[in-house]
Image (cartoon, rainbow, N blue to C red; front, side, top):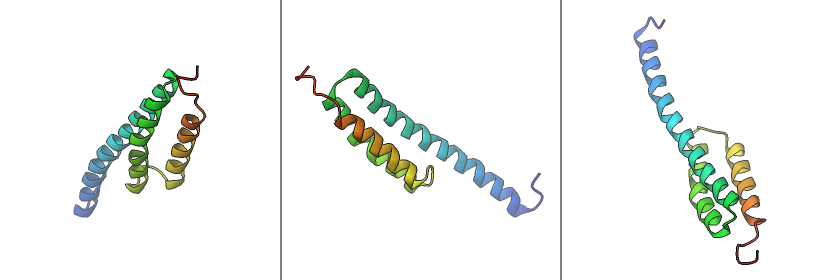
Length: 92
């Protein structure tokens, strides 16, 4: 257990940061899930719109330290590739 005042303060700060980071991670996962659901539905317009909304959230997660910048870049790249290779509904 923390014995010094500074150590106690660091425990309190860590608990607060953990809650904030968990919320950020959850938000990123939600946006990624929306893109994946749009891809699964086959609607390219919806998938593109969801990707445009998700991309800044994923990047923000990297900037805020929730994930590594390479991880964020990889997620955006893979989602964009999946959206790009979809066939529009009008062609089907």
